[in-house]
Amino acid sequence: MLRVISGSRKGHRLKAPKGLDTRPTQDRIKESLFNILGSIEKDSSVLDLFSGSGSIGIEFLSRGSEECYFIDNSFNSIKAIKENLNSTKLNENAKVYKNDVLKAMEILGRKGLNFHYIFMDPPYRSNLIVNVLESICKNHLLKDKGIIIIEHENTLILNECIYNLHKIDERRYGDKTITFMNR
Image (tube, rainbow, N blue to C red; front, side):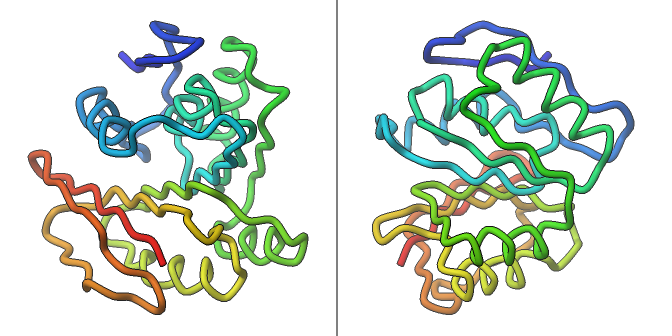
């Protein structure tokens, strides 16, 4: 069962997208992720890439983030995100886009948008992480003191430095790893 674990919408149940294409972030991983981040800035902006159910972006909004952009190319994921935003009444603080992540990031960059937090959980074994990190840098999507959070399979070892981004923390949870990066 997916749920919001803290903040203004604590305990609210969330729907997962239909099908087997998504792996929602487990509650214990989500809780650990937010414990590592500490308190969330109230005026913070969030970019949730490969959003799936939207549970991470919704968790940020529940904890006080001002806005969240959700990007996914799956119809079922977009449907679940919109339903979850409506049921949590957080849709006014959200923008949801059905698009290829790399194309969407170019569009956001052209609009001059940048974010305090960027979360990504790309399909495992897709080799997309380095391309997404390059696009984040190229499109200036990360604010100066922003943090990138990457959920990936633990068999993938990310370099300490990729482009101008540096690994600041990494935690393993069974077959998953969460890597934190900043400039």
